[in-house]
Length: 513
Image (cartoon, rainbow, N blue to C red; front, side):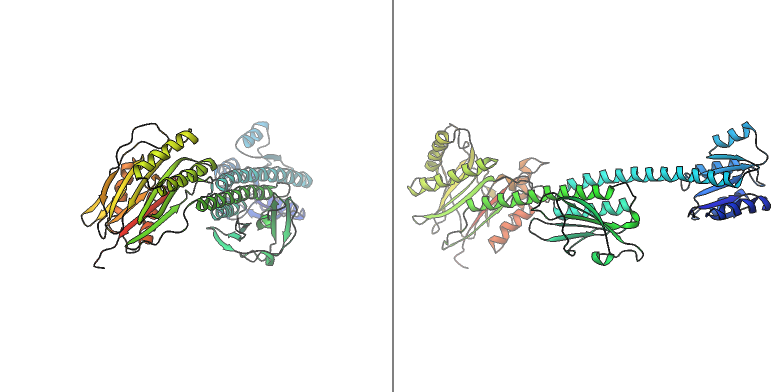
């Protein structure tokens, strides 16, 4: 029995009866039309697999009907067999084939010849459809793989993967993977949604496999009632959980492992994302361990610090800050060692400890910078860093400040916002250094120190970032922690942070509050 549906077009009731009878006995589903116009009207939505077409029709020739079928993008790949008792010479047969027919039978036709020709043409077109479907799926697989590997988070990765699976297989899909922190995440549907969900535990060895499950085993989404679920699982390492891609079984083409390839692509991307997330977490943990964890309690001052690692970096940065009380004065330092690496982090730690050591000896900010610069040129001759260092007397608000190539601190008072111009060469360079500056932080005034990650933008000069900082600091939140959070959130802008950010904020109390 053959499940194909054939449309027989012939104005002769007798001949049409014979053709329909032969094809029906062969197991085909057969529909009939008497004219070309009637047949063309029937085709849309009729799911016809093959047309058996008489050349001589009352309203138009079979050649014209064939041409119109083949030129229609909706069903132009549909095979057509011409049959004729009149147009039987070589010219007629040649014209029929040149105008789109796939076969040409001359009457009288034997039933076996008709059936064998129909089966041969359908075999060819079935193979062609499989090849075209595979080619289309492979193109979509390549596009999905590119999107998967471009994703920046595990959630985005799963979302583009399930969206790709939906487009490739044309129906419900689930993509399941475990994040770096052990959450089992399932991406479902189109448009995708992400939820925590875990299937029943079944062993999966390293490698990949394809199996058939019951829809109830994957009840995270709705499946067709008359279908099962085909699941591809891929596991790259024994110490990693597998990745799953589940789709309807009816969407699968035997012999073409597109689903398996998709699961392998997702597994490779998930493994890369997990490794990145783990490295980034280790880097951030190491970075924070090198930074000051607790701020001193200074009467008369509010203090706040914030450190935000660059989201695109898996390496440790060189940003640092220091706030320490020494002989009744607050020592404040903020700096940035060039580079992102373990070496940069170790240099940062050495510079920070050197600053504290020389400050404890009682040296002024300018003298500390001279000593740290000499230390770096002797011990770390290949490295450089920027540093802003100050001491603040909480009782009087007097600040003594020196800078080594660092961005200018921002001072916000009742008179407005302005930057404190304090210049000096980088640490690690043999050059003369200017004298330190002296200023007063008035009651209610706020001083902001920061590293370049806060104000640098990929698409603009740094003056743009400094202007945005000045605007954002025009209003200082009552809670300094909230103030520093707002600065980091607003600057340098969504998706613009290319470097680590460190911010230190100091505010002197008003006596009347």
